[in-house]
Amino acid sequence: MRLAEPVGITAATLWLPEERDRAERAVREGRLTPRHARDLGHEDVPAAVEETAPDMAVAAAGRALRTAGIEPKELDLVLHASMYYQGHDLWSPAHYIAHRIGADRALPVGIQQICNGGSTAVQLASTYLTASGGGASPRRALVTTADRFTAPGFDRWASDYGVAYGDGGTAVVLSGPGAGTGHGLLLRSTASTAASDLEAMHRGVDPFAPVSRGVRDRVDMRVTKRAYLREHGNERFVEVNRRSIRTITADALDGAGMHPRDPRLRYAVLPRFGRKTLQESWIAVLAEETSAEPLDFGRTTGHLGAGDAVAGLADLLTADLLAPGEAALVFSAGAGFTWSCLLVQAPPR
Image (cartoon, rainbow, N blue to C red; front, side, top):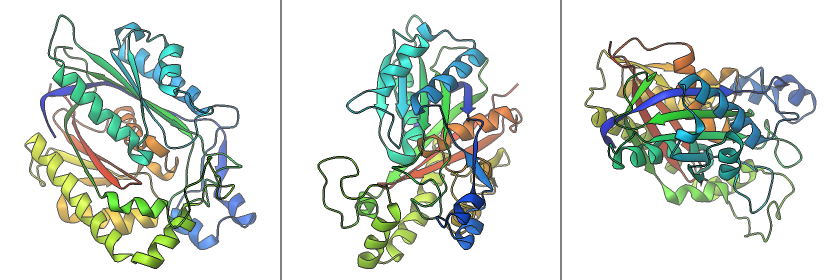
């Protein structure tokens, strides 16, 4: 989507718990085979012991707002995206986060788009900010994500194929037109595409249950994916995945007025999937579509649920990887399926 004007990314933060969960422990306990551990490529991932998912989002939000020099009362919109259980039933973590940080004037909105929630929230926030017009003062939005993948309902090493799940929170402060300078990055364009028939990969042949985990006592995406593949085979997903990556790459570049081999285009920030999945399903495709260097920030974090894209923005800023005028593509994808790309650029001098 071509934005009428770039949206300012004033600050972005990745907040991780101090504890780590090691792959070798999962192998020793028989939850992960040595081969699958090698395919994932993670020695360990962050694991929240005391921290709740919404409180990790609050911590990330506070840090991002301090870095941006923005008071919570200046926020117009707070969007929170998550993949897994947030700690209460029939409850809004977005409102909790807004309340905890003091954003009492903001509209809190929850986003439930599984692993693609962070990108979806950024895309919706950017649409809101650019559609609102200049007004007397610039509009500002906060996007947070947070997930905690803990037993007994979830096994971060064995609940899925090709992905290990790490705990953490992310936050990004977005500023609309008229907010002036001081942005770490500019969001130039966004792109998304979906293949809704692939929702069955995470449903399988399971019956609809009256309560969460009513069919089995642990989230097990391996079971539903095996059921889908027995009926449909793997070719459909492989073909759609490749086409979708190509589509969002081309659309994001077109929205920013850039060529796939544009010398300003430095990096392609990958989703935080396992090493084998990235090599076979992402890096090989992107090499055909752009000269951007692939970056895998997920070796030390694993997949952060809804937070991969916002964490990618945070890592770009923290490492100061983009020189003035240089750009990066930030990718994510999630069950449903939906694929997204955010094209960001460092402000020119």
